[in-house]
Image (tube, rainbow, N blue to C red; front, side, top):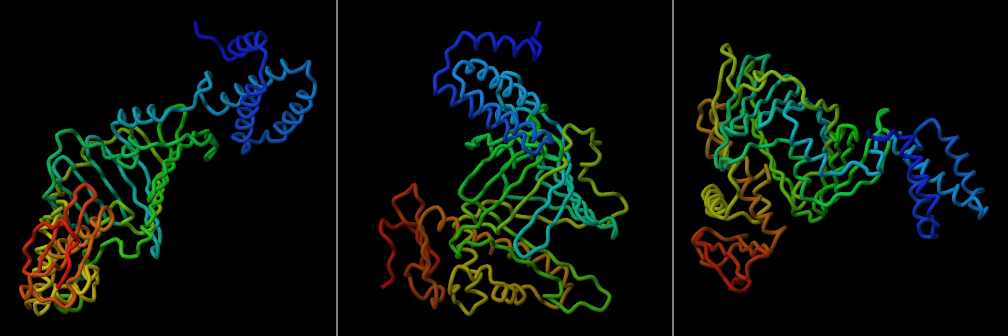
Length: 441
């Protein structure tokens, strides 16, 4: 038969009476009491806590009462842990237990507020049904994703329109996808339990995960071992050349839109590791775990009365071949010249005129916009590839003033940390290896 809290306290007091405390153990015990008092500082009983601390100072001045003081320590510890939902054996929530509960959850709903520099906060409502079904509501649109099929459905109820996007270039997963990656990515990281506190009237345990470009704080309900709040701070790379590649195109970039016609805007953005992001804070709250969600909410079949558009989006990883193709395209549309600097690939004043010249043929501007978007995607991915080399290895670019094919000198090169050779792209867009840093003649 399990012991009651009171029986556990008496058992520990009996054990304490048989032990002569050392200065070190007394100091450790005092520190545990101090932490309990700090964690309770948001509670109304703060005046009583101060009184207990003062009593403790008086007790320790009397040598004969040190055993009684040890008893006060244990009572204080047990009282504090009991108040804050920690198990009676004194152990706080273990992160492995939290991960286990997250993986066991089949559904969850939450609110996510995203704050980026120079932009007002954006709040979305999300529903998740494992494996890999997500429904996001934002303003007057609904986005539904099926990660098993690599397919997205975007619904615009006010206009009765829908867009189905097939993501290509992604390997099919062998295992079901657990979407809660903002937590599951933490499973292999070193985090620390920092404190207990009261959040919105609820006792919680707080975990902190700190990396060079990211800090994640997770507030966990010790009764359920599940998060009640998550805050992620994404920190940009201090290297000003490392940026977040993003750009938007509008249908009226290609042809003048007639009065009363809708202007369509589409954008592409990339965020990557190594601080290749804008400064961003994401706050995830209002969790409801294992909510009873209707599977029809996650259907990627558009309603029968909606006008439907189909499109594809290449989500394959950026690679050297993509960079070569973009350098060829750029030279084709720029009188044979390569970009003067690799960051030109994200300059809208340079990229948009190239795309407009290539696709604006006097037809339907929306159709021309659709043709331009995959090319814009490829251009931004080429910049992502170049930045990845700069972040994780070495990168050099020397294409300024060089025309395609007029020289076989190197125009860009890179070396990853795990290899001793440089990959080199030459002026004729051939590619090879070099054991030394390429030099132009």
